[in-house]
Image (tube, rainbow, N blue to C red; front, side, top):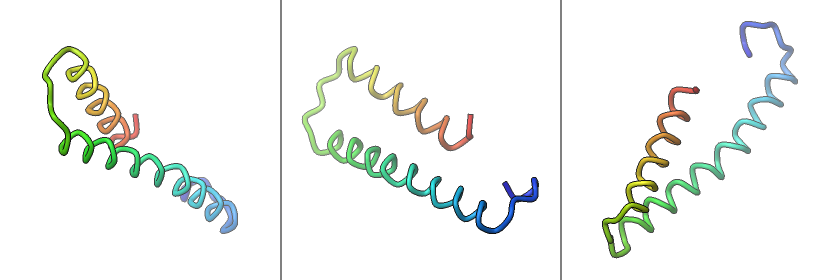
Length: 65
């Protein structure tokens, strides 16, 4: 965004949109994590699916893939 020569208004627009998208996603992940930690944990196949989904979701979000 900074290397392609966008003007100041376009950069601020894209930055604002990025924050508007990322904040609800962070709130969702924090809520999932706290619910998971405060609840009763039953280890079965659905728990493995949830953990793998969160791992892939977070690693994709952190690396930008």
